[in-house]
Length: 471
Image 1: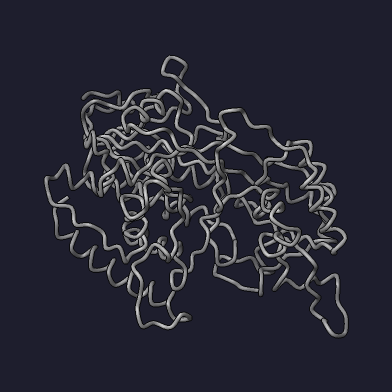
Image 2 (image 1 turned 45 degrees about the vertical axis):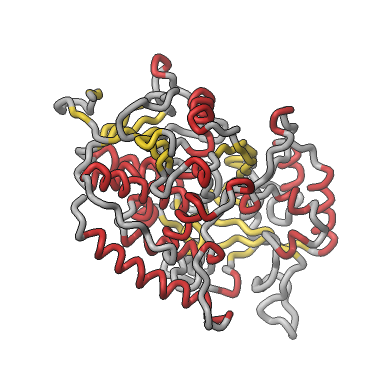
């Protein structure tokens, strides 16, 4: 198959066609290219009109691997946290997403957060510079009838291709709503009211000197008024065909959380524990007392000029957002670089339609990767793209693919997607220890450490085995 290549280079053929230049597609392309395979990576954002260029409802640019929701890859603790363990495994497998994340990293306590523009730029630069990758700006409307293909179009798959996927899988399209948190300009935050501190003063090597979060304190009266404002604020109206679409619990709109009880937010994104307000000291609390509730903001870019409101993804209309969020102490004059939003995500019923190597049962030349498979989260999406690329490389080499142990974070996530979950009730899932094979005779408080110790040993052994197989 001939494709148009980069300027001043000879025409090249490709071994694998990857549709979608998000995190999963970018990672899959990298893994294949690093193994000597030629890749055509198709991305519709940035394509000219005659090639069907199209922007999604959530993206802001045509950059590859753009982050459209939070800028956080969540916990980087690989000793007692499932997603941190997944970070560890991806780094061991030469993940491009983890590489770019380190370059773009911004302070976020024990979490891994990135400057989203720097991150996207690093991913795109690495792929553009790789001699085995050709990036085509084009919209693909049909699943290829032949040739190894990885579909990594994510939760915002274009309508025509989504319809084609529905027909190919024989399933109704599944969907859920995902929400986006607002971003605030740092210089519009009143630091005479707010203060910088990480919860319990936890630090990492990447931490700021004072802490990693800007904290906006609330009294009980302010919190109750804010809660009522969430309940009363004008919300986005759904179209008729969206009425029965569920929310994903890991990215639930703050007003939906608030509707579950007046105290719910104080035990969620607005919990005040471990945060000492230096503006409220007494002889008994010389370091400051805990407020009744706290709104936290996390650095969103390298310059520290943009900060996002942690856990404040919302479906409030823009005017209602501005009016309500400016009642938060310290944000009275807030200027928003981006307001919160809501978009409809789509995913396939993977346990029913995919085999254990992410191949479409009815058309095994096609693999799926990323969020469209029903994993949730930046890291999980990237990880599934990573393993899809490795699987495709082994298939091309004609060598036997060695299955990942389910005791690893990536293996557990893959098992959930490709068969362990019930197809009738399948829903998107973040990686968590509940997906791992259970440990017996381990005390509860030692279980997370035991999970990570077992996973690291099993992953190390798997890497040694798979490196002994030509790919």
